[in-house]
Image 1 (cartoon, rainbow, N blue to C red):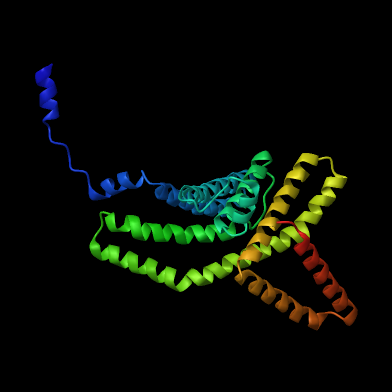
Image 2 (image 1 turned 135 degrees about the vertical axis):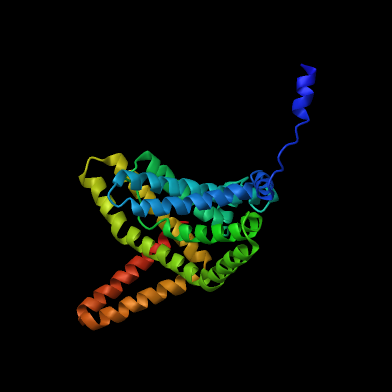
Length: 280
């Protein structure tokens, strides 16, 4: 038995490729799972839009988007907590961090939406994931370029080409896609606050689906709450929103009479007043 054991151990093992060595080291790091979360977010987002004729599939992929992207923000927040940047020892500290840390804002909103969708899979805020998927796309590309591409077992020339393409894409489109993401958040909030929330409040009164209506209302309110936090913190969002409203005003000036213009202005004032009264 001893001779057999020694003969087995003397057999030289195959050398581990550099990529596999790198991968083994990466999977011990939280950053790798952060990357996987973003990658799966993009994957399920694509699958969500490919499932045009399957409502059940769309509901599943919507929940998976929320789950995966929430994990990425949880990983970042845990790193903040370990470093002392995030303090949760009191409600006051939590509210203070909530107004300054965009990662905490996104995590809170996405987690609430996930819980609502788990409670009832018909609770979907259309457009709520568009901005975070855009962020995920750029996070994936950057992580792949910096941490995986250099170790891939492919020709150096091909690596350089891929690296250059990714670099050019990030440099030329990062700011544009960031603006698009903010525009998606504005549109989603307007639709949620001006259309979905009133409809769900009416349904709460006239239908018997009390629990579903409450879940939808909570989801609606959570997104409005999230958007107000973003609106206060991110100075670019008010600029974009004012531009959107100005374009609408310019269009309506040409099609409405004076009486309707007055009603439109009163409506804007009322919406703005309600928005600023919304607690955060």
